[in-house]
Image (cartoon, rainbow, N blue to C red; front, side, top):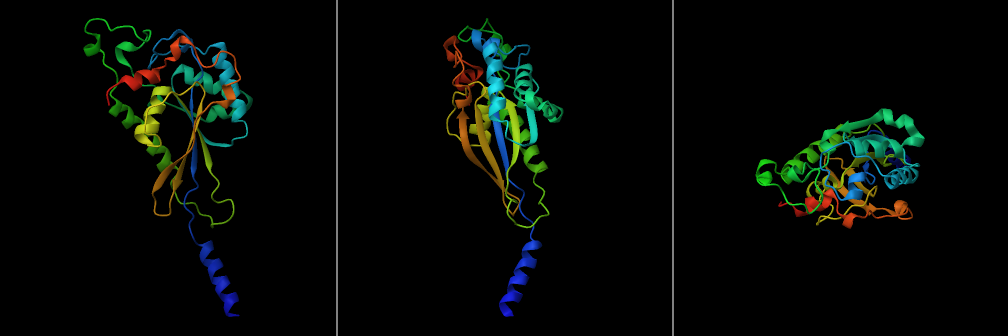
Length: 253
């Protein structure tokens, strides 16, 4: 009788325990190859660049890779190249496009006088002072702002017992840019120590794990995975392989 009573009390206590919020699994993706990527032109926050035929194939391959993922939220930079990549990646699940949040905080770095120029072109006289790039500290601020909004929005304790399935992750789609994601990985999430080259449509997965005390931590699951695009012709992009992320690599921090 004593053991049965104890088991009953434990069961009642567990039923009243608030589980910590289920982890968020961020699927952080760089956009597909653009005309500017192919031509070796620095894009930054300039808009109007279209995906190349290869970039569109990359986006479709991305969609096939993520086809089995049930997304809790979807987020995208408000620049055209990320919007186009997202639309193509979700073409087979077009109803999800209605749920995409387009956010200027996910934009690429504003690269000042370099924008619209070929990589390696020198600045015009006075341009470096008149039109400097966005400070990395400012990029970190907007990245942190977006991330904390996401974390806090999903941080409410869940009214469910600690039972099987309660720890299932909630998947979040995030479409952005090479330079911005580099800043996010190193300076905000702090899941890497160095800046790195991110291929078009590569996927990085980071979990946001909540604890019962209201805190959270970040866990890197995979970094810059691009197996889904490696069998596509002409990959990686030509034009000396330079991207906006390489400009980020050259900026003082």
